[in-house]
Length: 553
Ligand code: PA5
Image (tube, rainbow, N blue to C red; front, top):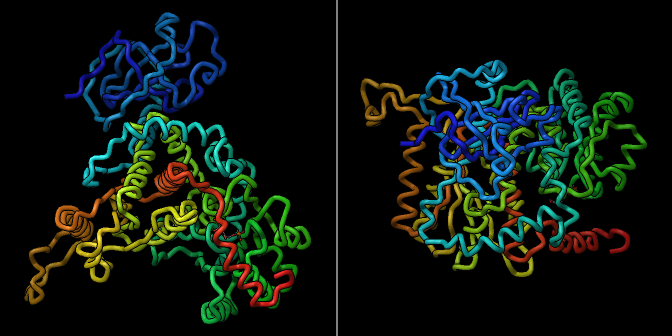
């Protein structure tokens, strides 16, 4: 039974949120509370962050417990200087439990007014991403990795490792351009109000994150009023010609996305679709329908934006394509799709606070990176990303690019693959179960689908399915997953990792994106690889340009 804190206890907690009226603190036993601004210091407190910051571990005194919800009323100033010092020892946060509480005479009016909302948010933050490492089969000595992983965490934060000029994404959830975000929201509304289709024109990191998010959050057969079509990710004449035919006579806007501004797939598709648009509505109207996301200063696309006066968003210099989903590269099309990009940033922010943590034993993000490293060095060469939701299959595509392009260098790295179950249990299931022992699985799971259906009754029961009558598809899908994990782990000896979120919404997805980017940086640095370049991608381009007769090749 979790022990409740009592009045007058002196306890250690972690600051998980700051409002102008106080600082919220979470505890190992699942209790949560507020240090009201008047309880921060004996001095006049103008800015709470002068005393405590989110992520700080603090020692506080329990002044009382609010009845009903067991919220703690806390004080920093009730402690003497020595007691008040920040705690260096990291906390272990177990699954929070709601526990009953006693009475209190202390009156924090603001606490009462704001607490419910905050408590829910705080619990949401703590539980945002769950991991299950119980089926990894091997007994990994995480402690042996701690020293190196801590060094790498410092290296990421101090920007002292290889590729250090591409670490802007690590603090982006707090440093992002606030004015640009508001402009994106405004422009997205304009697109939604005025067009039937948005053509997203980009490749690799310049489209995968947006597609992953839009599919995951809207589902694959969304009835949203704005259709999203992807272009610029292929040279396929059939695909491009069909898209162009489809767009004829339709009211569409374009979001062209390219950091370099010179990627050939994207440039050709943009030239074609821009030409179609200009022919349909005239050059002036077309200008208003084109939104570009590119480098702040350089590149052919930037020059075109300057000449034509397109509305332009920026991909910062220090963020590379596959780490750019939380910048305008991902956020603008996601906002156009009617999704809440502020919530997505909030989720990423909470994940940043949670996983920028060198207490490796209590950092699931880094533990996941360590497991990958361990398997790489113990005869596994493939990480298979698994989902049980077709709408998440592009999250797997995004993950394949993230890990593949970040780690696959110098003859090293796990090959990232992906399957969608149960569909692929009827194709690759045999290999996974019984084939060569080269792989482990990482399941990306959503606990509660946003829609569900029950199996109906059938009088004749000729298909023999009445034993499932009234059962939901989510229940059946869950049993399929449990049965598969058991088969793969126990019989097939294939290690399984589960990374899950309660529900698929913008907040949780923002957190997941950040979790995987941070894990990828840790994992690549454990391999002694620069996670942020992609020298191998250039070779096919050189050959292709030579064969196409481009000047200088
Ligand atoms: O991760 C990367 O850097 C790549 O996948 C790029 O995003 C992709 O090649 C597209 O490049 P650009 O945005 O310059 O058109």
